[in-house]
Image 1 (spheres, one colour):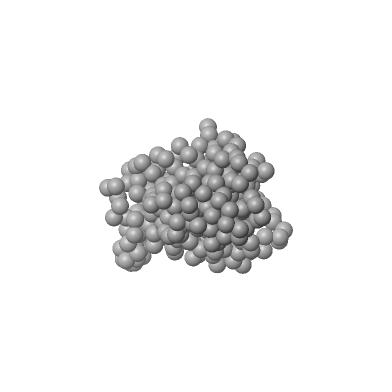
Image 2 (image 1 turned 60 degrees about the vertical axis):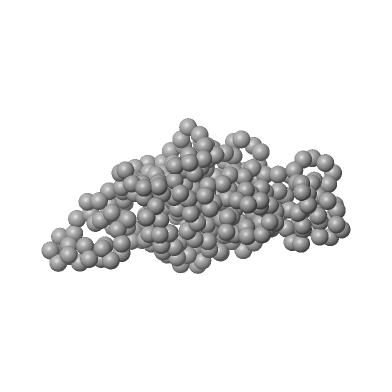
Length: 303
């Protein structure tokens, strides 16, 4: 459970108190305006879930089972532990471990993104595959052509950065900028086919950093106009909940609706594979799977 999770979008937390789940960990989110704090959700008295029927009373939640006041934070007998929370626009991130090794430079990165870009929620989907498969997609270079129909992907490499995040880099080659409308893209493709010459000369940078088995931050796009796609997966019984947020600079906010549609389309394409995946089947890797294997080694380092 070490490392960061994209635990919720702000819109998911409409009430003052909202139950959350990360794997077997029961949590409660307490919202005060746009400020969100996250605590253990199990009452230390007799195990009730404070997120279901609990009522806020100042610095406490009144337990729905016996009416005891459970302090939010601290280490008294009737208190619940607080967890580290980061917020970037609509995205709420939670780290369950106090071990600084679980950060891998994420806090600095997400604060920089929040300070320079508008971050919006794009898509939330329940997935039957394990959470790690969602982040692994960023390291599965060949799936971009097979699943998402990217005409040409040129791998650059995979490595650990100075903060301990796992980085994969590639260059996407397309006919046009990925930020043009589908109508413009189809018209350009038809024109190129009509000329009998289709050249994939538009290069977009793909730079993805996994900060934990559950969160990957991808910088993507043409030089000078890159955007961020933040993908997270929270384990739940039977699979996970995948969330994607997108971020653009103030001068590029007009691109956000297109980015949201692109995230929705990409996740829908991935779901066809994820929801029919046999994770217990034999796997026969080859040299092109090196980034995936590097990601799996990275996951193992979290214990």
